Length: 417
Image (cartoon, rainbow, N blue to C red):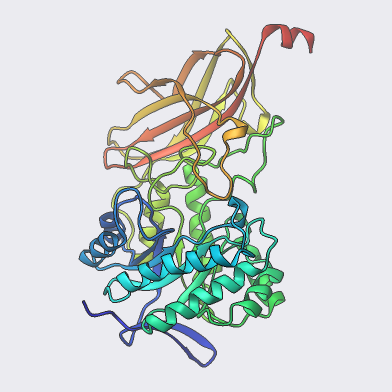
């Protein structure tokens, strides 16, 4: 295999990635177990991984499939995190990690689908030992020793100026930085100015507003935006803070091309668990290709329960009847279908941290037969914390989503209050 020469070129203070001498602006997505084929179909040209091999494919298989569809890969190197117990003052452990990663570099460095190496993911998240950055720099030096054709970066949680300055100081061998921002992506210009970072960068994760950034119910459950609200924010964030920086930004990876459970099964994926695409996926296709989708997904205006929205801190009494209703826009005559689900909330002790694995809660009931409509009546279950979901599916593989947290209390609790 012949590797492609990937270079970071600077001219007139403007940075540009080049692949074999041709400009390459990253129109990418984070893709762990999502469809590589669909990313190419929607107009993406690259994706990033978080590790060399996942539960389904080896690093070489990932690169081979990417190559078949004309995509490039920012290959993630799974560097141990301090928040998971790794000690960067342990020289032996650091050396062992470097040796393992070296084998991956040697095995994959000449693959023509390789774009760059991503050294670790959010190593700054709740870290205290600055020696982690010495290890990152050492890894970058090792990569450049054996692979002169591909740049190195590291993915930072956020873009706080003090973190950027620390990484700049201790990781001079990195070719560029990667930032991961969600609701606070609008602060990136001021962060960069305050840090005085003048190098190139990628937005390696961005998308829906994070569950840690939104308003919560009185019982501390985050309020998720509808799929339509998310789609609008994807568009504005891309245009206003990614494409708008033509000097330092060389592209981005939207999160997530696929589906994952993180507080809810619908929060971050631009696809659903059943493979249906959301409006956000169509937005990305339009941003990447400048072509509008032929079939628009339904747009949800509001989900209410007995006239109340999620912002009203909806409390129910177990055993009583309630009615939920979704209002939406879909001007076509094509058939649509509705699916309603009541799901338990994630137990607080099982909530993931920093994107780690989180188990999907139990579904109490699901209604999606031919009689299901834009409203549903149901009896409140036993006391506890739940979340009501509605999905509106069109006839072209698209789906709109909305949900609201519910707190079910006992009649005795209600009478006492």
